[in-house]
Amino acid sequence: MRIIVGEGSCGLAAGAGAVHTQLEALIAQDNPRGVQLGITGCIGMCFLEPIVDVYEDDGTLHRLVRVQAKDAQTIYDAVMGGNLELLGKLAITPEDEQFLSKQTRVALRNCGIIDPESIDDYLAHGGYQAITKILETGMSQEDVIQQIDVAGLRGRGGAGFSTAFKWRAARDSQGEQKYLICNADEGDPGAFMDRAVIEGDPHSLIEGMLIGAYSIGASEAIVYVRAEYPLAIIRLRKAIEDATARGYLGEHICGSDFSCTLRIKAGAGAFVCGEETALIESLEGKRGMPRLKPPFPAQAGYWLKPSNINNVETYANVAWIVSHGGEAFAAMGTENSKGTKVFALSGKIARGGLVEVPMGTTLREVIFDIGGGIRSGKEFKAVQLGGPSGGCVPASKLDTVIDYNELAATGAIMGSGGMVVMDETTCMVSMARFFLDFTAKESCGKCVHCRLGTKRMLEILDRIVAGKGEQGDIEKLEDLCYAIKDGALCGLGQTAPNPVLTTIRYFRDELEAHIDEHRCPAGECRDLISYSIDKTVCVGCTACARQCPVGAISGERKSPHEIDPALCIKCGNCKTACRFGAVKVA
Image (cartoon, rainbow, N blue to C red):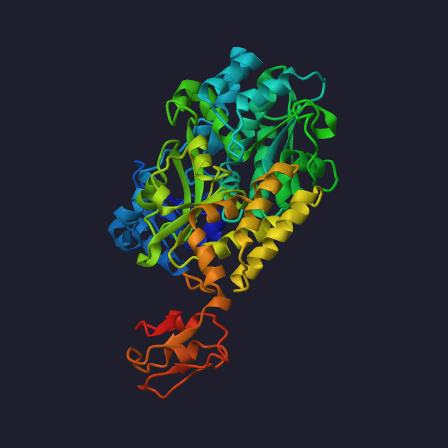
């Protein structure tokens, strides 16, 4: 039997390390059944971490969720005693199992299944068969690129550009030295797809990059990963060492004439370095700022040599495509968007985590069928797609299918796959301000439109959420949005207005309420709300008073309380603490 502890960053943050340590100590004392204890990456069900999987000898899986160190003894006793019924209270529910059962996993096929620190485990699950097939059968560069073309694989990093087109352009460029680069600088708030792939299945990234390097004629590959992903870097570094030792990296791979090395560059975490030319500048030791294009990286990239850049998820699909054929990948999805897409579900969602679904799936299916809808029984209001560069899609557009063109038509973008869900308590004006504040701070400052335009927009939104909005502010925002889109040098500036434009498009009434009525309909903007206690409902339990950090609530026990507006800092603690709905926000 095997006991596998999920040790992605989410699992470790929830206490998986302590669970592993306790199980390890128990098994070390006595292990009559020869149980193996191992680790795996994130299976995607972050809302259930820590997760422990118990595999019987015949492969039967018992998934245990929200496991704590104190549960280790129960697991040990059940496994060693052969009485797995004792694990019932920890077992995943049928409802939560739907989170995985309704997915189709290609990029995430091994995450949460294999040991990310074992190359043997990767090999046992079909690893490195694709690159071996290419080299041993003598597939040409065009043969490989043709499979990627047939698959219809588009870049999963945001722009959705044809992967085969980029590979051909780099292959056809003249130059003895070429570079293949992976963009793992995942900077969108709420996005963690790339991190999960590297932490859970680093060899799939390596194999995908090897196939890409072979296809364009590159002898050196680089993974540019944000330094804030220490566990991902540790596991990727080990995977590189193991792949090199086994002959899958380095000179004469698999006994062929193909040679390729791979190294890691840890970036400082600048959002603009998600733009490929800014990333290249950073790789060269310069400040991360975008270059003018053309020339494109395929002609003059890293050190002005032909280079190709794709993100982690794109490369994670490549080996699967080569092994199964481009037609199998293209059979999933829509006419314009093939295959599957990974999303990071976060926000006011009941079941948050990583989701991989075929293109063509509706937003409603992802958010409600897989994600379980809004937690706490609130009403769905909107979903932010594409991170700070994306837009807010309202409830009326929930049946929009996941397709590059269809999402673009809503004013949002596919992006790298962030999906932040909002409920009725979310102020859309404040949300637009949040994302714009992020992009304004992350602007590299190279072009005036982005550097100053986003700042001017932010100043207007600051006034609006503070109750100081003026007539004409919405029109000013629109003018600035289109000026920035038209004049910005790179994708960061060109897409920065998207959250504001979609807010104006779908939630104009909220903007007008802030400006004309000095009112926040969602009750979120502190300068536009006030707290009071309904004395006909208050029972005097004192829960609100105990939670008030500034002593603004007074009243005798079992008598109605009241809030002093002069002292109230509008933190909301009282409303959260009240079990009777007596605290009102207006």
